[in-house]
Amino acid sequence: MYNINSFGKYSNNINNVISFAIGDVNGDGIPDYVYLTGNKIQDSSFIQDITLNIKDGKTGLIQNFKLASNSGYSPAIILEDFTGDKVKDIFVSIASGGSGGIMFYYIFTDINNQIRMIFDYEIYNNKYSYKIEYENYYKVSVMNIELQTNYIIDITYKGKDYLNDIYMPNGELKSPIEGWVDPLSGLYPVDFDGNGIYELLGYQRISGQYHADSLGYVQSVLKWNGRKFYLMDQYVAIFGAEVDEKG
Image 1 (spheres, helix red, strand yellow):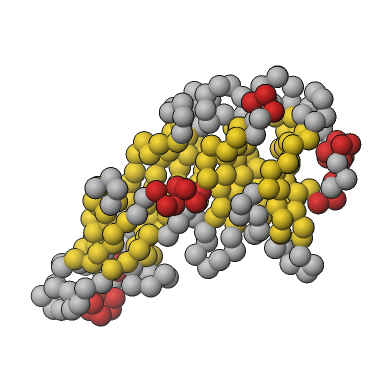
Image 2 (cartoon, one colour; image 1 turned 180 degrees about the horizontal axis):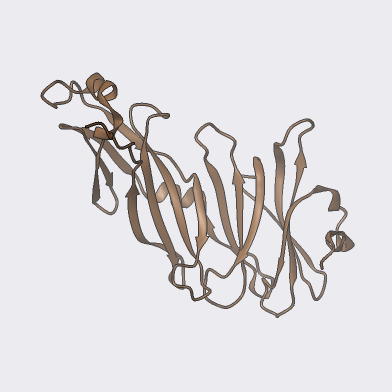
């Protein structure tokens, strides 16, 4: 069993450790100590100045990396192999605390004690843009502009009151309505192939007339191609409606 005090042997910041994991991240076969430090706000679960720290399990060398988005809630670390080199990579997640459930995500490698970021949530969020348009006859179009792929959501499950507000009796829109897709609110390591190399499954909420008017989620599968994560598959997931058993 590992003792958290091992983190403090070479660091005076042990009291500020907020999340940790243990595994070989530099490729020498010896488990390393990977941990996040930060400053907790008094009487709050909000944490500032979140920093990634890696202590070499062999030499005790400590590396520090200040995250660009370094404030939030419930910071966490997961160690998995995303690149296929049989060495653990470092997955960091932080909850923004905003009403939209937006999350901050980073992935790092540390081969030969050289920290390198291989995933930045901001770059991903800015890479793809979406056009959300309500259409006649109770449909919503979801288009990934960069990929030129389109998905159609049937919104009849929303119910008569919702539909009557925005559609005429003949099913045509009363006026144009556009929605939007949120930034990442979920990103999860998943080994789809069962080969020990993990992909990423991302979730982005689709909103209609207002933020609480959720229409479903854009689900994206990202895979490492030797240089970067690329979008392998993308889907739109919708909510179900209760079955009317009358009659």
